[in-house]
Amino acid sequence: MAKFDLSQHWQTSRFASFDLETTGTNPQEDRIIEVGIAVFENGEVVDRYQQLVNPGIPIPEESVSVTGITDDDVRDAPTFEELADELAGRLGRDILLAYNHRFDTSFLAEEMRRANTPYVPPPCLDPMPFCWVHLREKKITKNAQLGTVCEFFEIPLEAAHRADHDAEAAGRVMLRLPDVAVLPPTLNELLQLQRGLSQQTEQAFARFRRGKSDGPVLSSGEITIELGAAYLYGEETDPIRFLYKRLPDVRDM
Image (cartoon, rainbow, N blue to C red; front, side):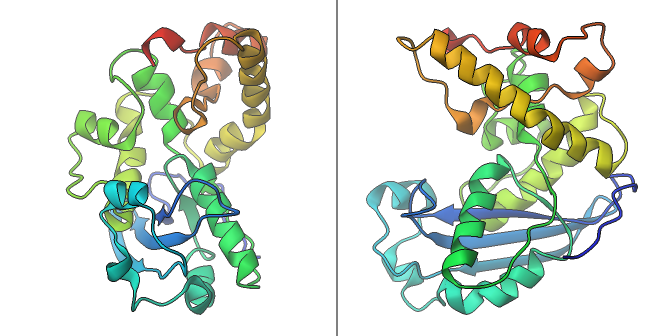
């Protein structure tokens, strides 16, 4: 596994922002149909990659309506197995970034497993929970979806739900977050916020769902929340109490 210098300032570090388009939402049953990567360094894009992938199964109409990618588009494209070694290299040598990264990293891991390709993913930054806390939760934006956040930051997103465009937009959103949030300076500190507190937040939402079992179901695609700098530098000492104070109002989801 590659070693990464996590002491460097994240805004000037090199990271590979990536996005996957898929046939659906289940990594065990669905397949990747497009990969997009935008490599950032010192806040600028230094490399781009885009590749359609033949999933080996028909692309459902629901996916076509979202991505615009059809069976004809991927008919002559390589399979993931044929691309696995190249992608393991491209997505294995830099810190990663993905918007709502659990979706993309779970698909990537499952496809690598099916391809019998050794792959240990690097740490992955994720701007989405910060956008939720500092934009959606404060009612600055109506939601924390990538397109909405890009509109707020005036970041071009000409082809939403195409992997290469989404990947670059997600990286640019990350770099704009200091405009609305006080964030720790180093990669290590940002990643600690995501890794070390994610279990606590998931437990908090699990308790919330159990208490609201007859009400609306919150979507994990948008409501993953981390405590962030507001907790670390605030007066509240109990992380679970802090989280409950920050739970979204399900009436306006």
